[in-house]
Amino acid sequence: LVLRSLADGKETKVENAGSFRFLKTGPLVYRRTPAEGSKDNAAEMGLIVPATGETLVLPGVTDWAANKADDLLAVATSTDRQTRSVVPLDPAIRTLRPLTSGSDDVDGLVFAEKADVLAYLLGKETAGKAGEDNRIVVATDLRTAPKLRTLEPQKAANFPKGERVVDAAGLELSKDGTAVRFGIGKWRPATKPDPLASNVEIWNTADLLTPPQQRVNAPRDADAASTAIWRLDAPTFRIVDKALETTVVGGLETGRALVNDETPYRKAASDGLRRYDVKLRDVFGDAPDVVLATGLLAPGRISPTGKYVLTFDSGRWTVYDGRTGATLARTPGGFGDERDDHTVPQKPPAGAPFWLKDDDGFL
Image (cartoon, rainbow, N blue to C red):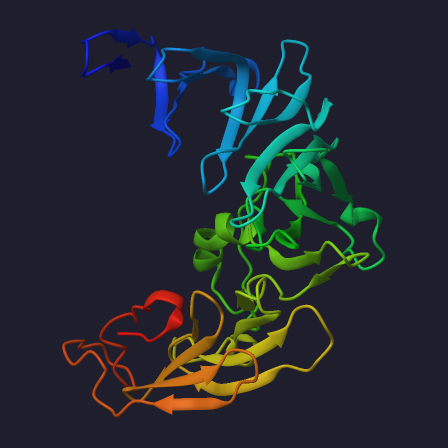
């Protein structure tokens, strides 16, 4: 990687650069390619100020993330002794004060969009199982005196037995950093199947899928996770959907999430088409689901801010209030894809809706 000043032609070179990007605030951040066999895939990371040529070098970086304004970074590091730390870094001040430090693996660094709040996973291996036993850390007040909140779901009474917080599902913070979404999935045995074992397949006719289909879907099903949401002002979390049966979208900002529920239509004998009941779910409270539509061939869609929900049926788009579920508008027909020649009861939508700024409308 070569950084050249267009004013005087002066160059700064970085060997074995694996990735780089300019921050909105000016500095260039690079990370070298990890050496073969390096523990935790750690490598040197550098911060270069192009105007002055000043460079800050951090060894043993495994991951990093920046907030939306690019004026605050979070850096995960690992030493030869496998001490893993998470450090907030202000590129202007360049102060380094670890938030956490220990032997646990660090994963899933993510910032809130509109607040100096950081969330990440700390995990440790468990004998006889594949994957890690993760807990969630949320750090606030990162520029002054950082405060840590830790959620250890396994200690909660409502945590499902035989399951764990999965890193594959990642973490998502609400824009103001007051709630975090994460995934809960089943443990997998660390042992591999015996290649000498019988491969006789028995298909129970009540199964939704035939054995070949089950084999194809096995990797996806192994990583499937239920969605859980933790409000930082609440003592515990809430599980808001069920893996492979329902899909929950949104909810972190408004407390109302869109649910596409396939459960009523998951039958061994079917026409092969996926159908959905579209609902609104209270993910912060105990209010019952609000059913918007049933038996649709297309899943519902939620607007970026969560203000509205769209459904598509018989060539028409219907708009609902994202909080109350009230029907607000319905387009005329004719929005199906007439060029689609599949043998289906109705045409799919001709295109996905494009939302205007602040959900002021959609095309």
